[in-house]
Image (cartoon, rainbow, N blue to C red; front, side):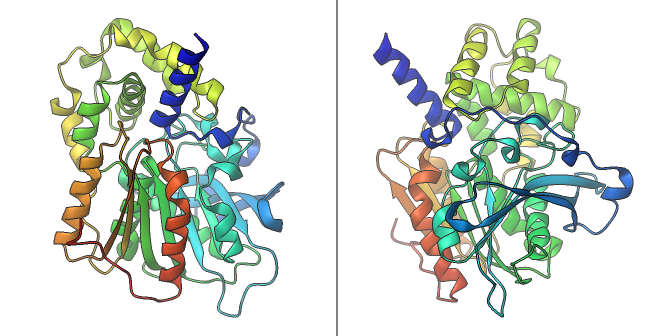
Length: 395
């Protein structure tokens, strides 16, 4: 029984992208810090509303919890929260480069924001080597996590705008020096966010210079992923969160595709955070009824309006001027390796320079951790102005 329990935990870790280093701490209670009035939200996207210092940043860095202005799905002004980490010492005359971290799934409700997590710094993959390279790291929560929800889960434009505005906000933090060069690095949902950051950057934030996009096991072909995910217990968890979020964000009729007996289970899953081993085990128990009764349609990925929404949030190829780093584990049963390889090939066909890191015996949950050093080194080369390598034609 003990061996079986350990196997279940490991499987669920792999599904959700929650690493063992996260620990077992629950999220802190939300505070008034996250609540912004209409008057506070009014202002240019990417400007700070407020910040507060945080303790225990690694390597002597200074960290702040931040609340900044951004743009909602309908063009409305919104507030978004996150964390900014600045290396110790004065910045160089040219300012410090910025790396935007885009996090994997933590859930879809406000109290599940990474900036509220006890071990937030351990969740940012590559943070220590990035600080050692004198880079500023900014980590958005995405809209609706921390701030009022619901979170637009797997909605690329929402994620990309939040990332870009987090970089804008970080430029004004003490010790940054106002540098405009940045890279984006993300895992899973954050991989999708990183790709959309690249797609939106030139139009949405033309004053910033994006030197490269790095993504581990990114959510790309959502129609394929939604169809595949339903086959596993962890995939049912993610499908439930997607349906719950999109029904509220886009008004899609969830009751037309989810059995009435399953709707209360979906609601509970939407309220549970993914931060620790205990959370994962608890979600596994919550999800169990969905293995018997869940969808009332054969395939949510081919049912409207869900299919159209999935296609709308599937990233196209990046502009060829943006170098791309992709990482993928061979044992990933959530984002299938073939899906990431197909995106790699499309990017190559677009004329881009793409590095593709294939990691043997690595599952979904550990893709960000195991790719972090390679991603950080690749990002460092882009900041140094060195030509980007390419694996196009080799894989």
